[in-house]
Amino acid sequence: MEFSFETDYIKILEKIDLINPIKYAQTRNYIDGAVTYLSPYISRGVISTQQVLNSVLQKGYTLKEIESFVKELCWRDYFQRVAQIKNVSSDIKNPQSNITNNGISSDILNASTGIEGIDTAIRQLYQIGYMHNHCRMYTASLICNVAHSHWLHPAQWMYYHLLDGDWASNACSWQWVAGANSNKKYYANQENINKYTHSNQVNTFLDLPYEMLEKNKSTDALKIVENFPLTCKLPEPTTIQINSNQPTFIYNYYNLDPNWHLGESGNRILLLEPDFFATYPVSSHCINFTLQLGQIISGIQVYTGSFESLINTYHLKNIYYKEHPLNLGYIGNQEDRDWICKEVSGYYPSFFAYWKKIEKKIHL
Image: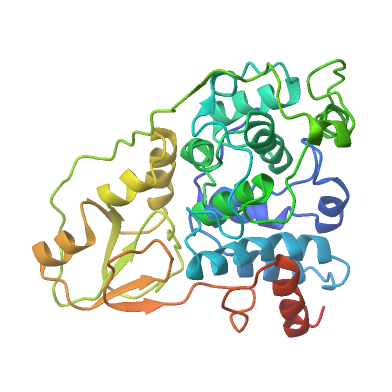
């Protein structure tokens, strides 16, 4: 895949209009399937799952015939609901078993595992900040269940590079693969990888039946592990202009919605907190992508510093922000995000349980 992700809002809306939910359901597991490539815009809050679903339904599809597509949108909402209740940076259900290290294989970092489908996906991750969802699972399985690394540091590595990085979705998915958020670990063998990445490898260390792969407790592959340097470079702090008679709308890494309070006068601030990015570091590619998306919002100013310092320095009082589990220390008027089904909230131990509630509410 050779392209970069657009940061022009009209072109983003055009991507929504191009969605074919039927073809998506039929081909989404293949690396060249009819996926939407909307995830970076949903993760950054430029568009919402509700907005995408409503746009598709306006074309005349019934909820029943696009159930697969609706479920994938709901997965995103589900992980956010989990993160509202649980600390997703720790094992959610079970301690990950059979761990030998807390690092990440050098062969993973160098895209030199010898598994073509995975190595190609890692190189693509570095180049454009994207990896197909199936390849994310393959990579996580290789790291957690073959190299026996604890999921956390590798999950941070992947999140660091992903333009669509969503810590809740990322961490919960890694834990699902590693058996920390599921009852069974996920394994991918060479046959499965060949099928969905259109590779044709044989006689690799993954070229085994699943039952043998799960019982194979050791392998010479991926033995050398290291820590990936998680450093994040933010823009230098600058002075911003504030009108104290107007409300202040706080945008951040997870909220860049250009339609939020559209048409209202106010101070619009993209807040980049050093402490936040020290805990959840991302690449310069991700920061630049965020800054470019921020330009969609008319009159926005960038503030590098803490929420507290912003408030105290500029004596802000009438403050608005969108709810997010990672908005630590925010004060003011908290507003809801645009959920597919706002009424279904709280923690559900499985997506299936969450989906059953959603299904009743939206009358699938």
